[in-house]
Every structure is written in C-alpha cells, then in structure tokens.
Length: 227
Image (tube, rainbow, N blue to C red):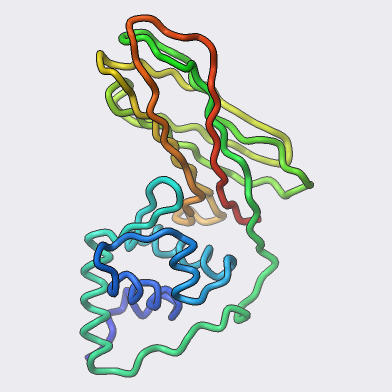
C-alpha cells in the first residue's frame, strides 16, 4: 500500500516518533524518553516535535509530557498498515539541511499569593528570568488557564523576549473550592503563520480560603526556545 500523503509530508524521524508511541501501553511520554528511545539529538527533536504538535499528531501537557492525539492514533494505524507491506523508512540524518538554529533554556516563573480568597480577584505575574548570555529575541505566547475559578476562557499574552527579564500580570478569581489550579503553557511563534512550537509550561495548585494570604510564592520551570 502507499503511505498517505499527510504522512509522506513528514520527515522520516517524525514517523519514527509515531512508531515509538505505537509501542507504548499508554500513548504518552516525556521528551527525554522520546529522544533517548528514538535516538534524536535535542536539535532534531525540537524540529520533529514542532511539526508533530503543529499538525495535530501530538499534544503537550505540563513538564514536557507529550501525548498522542486521536488524529495521531489514526495516523499511527495508517503507518502500521504501511509498515506491514513496505520497508521501514531510513533514519533521518540530523545533519541534513542543518541550519544555524540552536535551542536554549529559559526560566519560566509564576508569582502569586500563597493563598487566594474565594470570590476575590488576585494578581498573578507570569514571566521569564534574565538570560545568562546575550540571545536573539524570540516571540512567545503564554496561555494561562484556571480550574475551579474564573475567567472560564484561557488568557493569553505575547512576549517579545530578549535577554532581559519580562513579565505580564493576569487577573484570576477562585471559586468556592479549597484549591484552584493554574496552568501555564508557552508557545513559540515562528516566521510562518502556522509555525507554532510548544516550548513548555507548568501548573500550580493554589490553596483557597475565606481570606487571602498576600505573602507571595514563586514557582518555576525550564522551557526550551529555538533561536
């Protein structure tokens, strides 16, 4: 049989990532496990996962955990049918079409009161620490969503992030629960309209009570951006 067009448009290493998910009992894995099992460098993995997430084969949760989507599962079944009747694709040469792109780590930080007051609006600061060295600027989108609170729809802010630190302030209102979950997802925008890569994120469960504790706490996570 012939490989479907949408799969033929993917680089061979992306097909290897799909095959890797096909061998898992549960279709989710951490980025480091994928790189180790498939044999990808960080640079090659960054290119592959950007394509697979953008095209809807994978989605990323917190802490760089990737999950196969329903569309990805269908594509994997198509790929498995093809593999039964055709030789497996050759491994991708990561030096092919090499560019000057490189990946760097930036520190994502979220700061907020240690305890929120039910029904009262609170400020949440989400930003990035100053980089240790000079880096080219990148365009990032931060999406903040809440569980057990408002707003019901995710809030988004765009960051034009260079070496210096930067942050934005979001407003959230917890409901009458004992905890509210804040989830932050970071996406990197590329030169093309559909060039969107998942850079990382985190989530925090914040206590909720009748009165707020205005002493602030900070939480952080590393994200990966391509420059």
